[in-house]
Length: 361
Image (cartoon, rainbow, N blue to C red; front, side, top):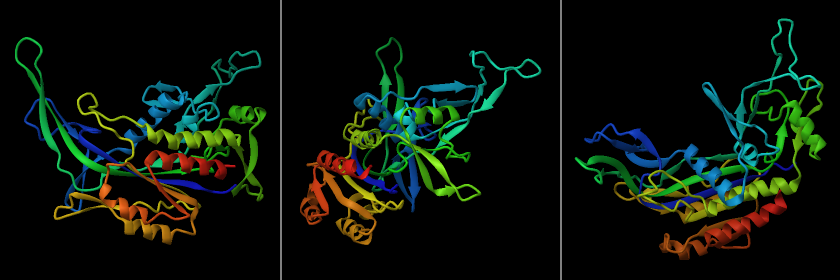
């Protein structure tokens, strides 16, 4: 089993938005004011979208545009969990889960088994799965000044009801990684993050044609490899490729009624590596007196391609939308080679996914 990872880097370009809010504003003079998420670094302020929000958009896009049947959510007291069935639900597989629960033990006739006190016997069915898809926040490349703009509800009789929101324009960066070996592959041993399947699901998987593999890294006290359960390669390919192709149509964000924005990537890099390190994290930066001009560093990309050439498997695909950062078009073309393909964003995504079909076996 080859341990490969998809490494992705994106830039989005948004104007006058409030994509992810932080609750009531503590600085507004209005009774109703909403703050946007910002964070400081080196004395400068940056707008950001939480990683959880980005994942929510991603999962929702997979449901709407790719027909994913999402795992149902159960709410009990102060906890909530999905069905934790990655065999049936692709989002449980790709996005991970944690389900701490106990099920009633049933007899062969389907009735509950009782203990000596007449109470139903229960068994621990706690399962967890570390998400194969990992992503950063989306954060502005350059420092950002948010603006408080006010609106009002004034169609009713009497006084208008004013409210305010923080808005900003920014080029935002994000990165993600997909553990390709983990997609559609499930550990079964009792260790947090690794007990992905209940005994019932293990038996169901094997009976439905899943493959049992030796875990190359985990052995028992006798030195015998623990077992992994793996879905057919066609299904694993589909889940990974759907996840990446969803970036072509991903949508979401707060305040979309009055502050609609396109959150699909305007620039993307996709590569497969045999290491977990994400090499493209520092290819975009802020410049200028106030660090408020977003710049994509061609030299930084060249350095990464050279320094990590031994870890990069296959070709690297770079895509840019026409109309976005057109001033770097000529420099971007200097990256093109037999191993680096430069094209539009959607073409880069499609071409990378074609390569991925050959890498997931």
